[in-house]
Image (tube, rainbow, N blue to C red; front, side, top):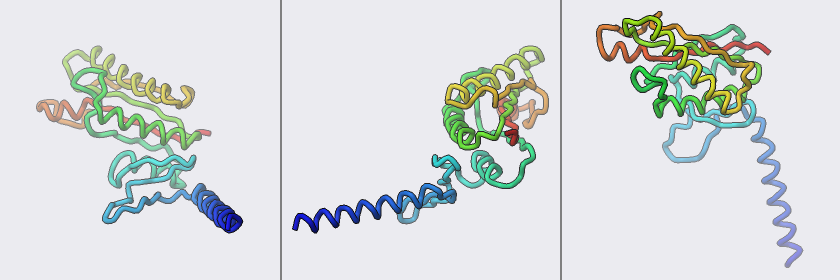
Length: 187
């Protein structure tokens, strides 16, 4: 009887090992069984890590572009609210995006990233430029602190240049308080 139990346990262990090895190379979206759940947002990265990036988000656009054969550089507007007002204090949403960015960049060591900070127009172009550069520097530091090598990162400020929102409205000015990213396959 003891011999039969040992054989069954050995077979179960072998089957588990084979299944685990088969899923290691899987680069398709990872599915976790939950009735009625939309699992299309869960993606596996080339290094085996997994993240959630819903279709239609900038994070998913980045993942999809990096998985494609397109080797040109790509510009991504982050969208959303990245900073609290005219400060370099990141919002909760921004901190979540940074963690996703770290995971994506670690999974793609051949990619470099340029971070471009923007601000709304305050009437003081020098202050706008300083703020926008400080924002880009903050993002680069957070990515580096998360393990992305500094030689793959750069930061630039554009001040209030290239607004995407109407500076005459509070909502428009808030849209201009943003960060964009340029990804390049370099290595």
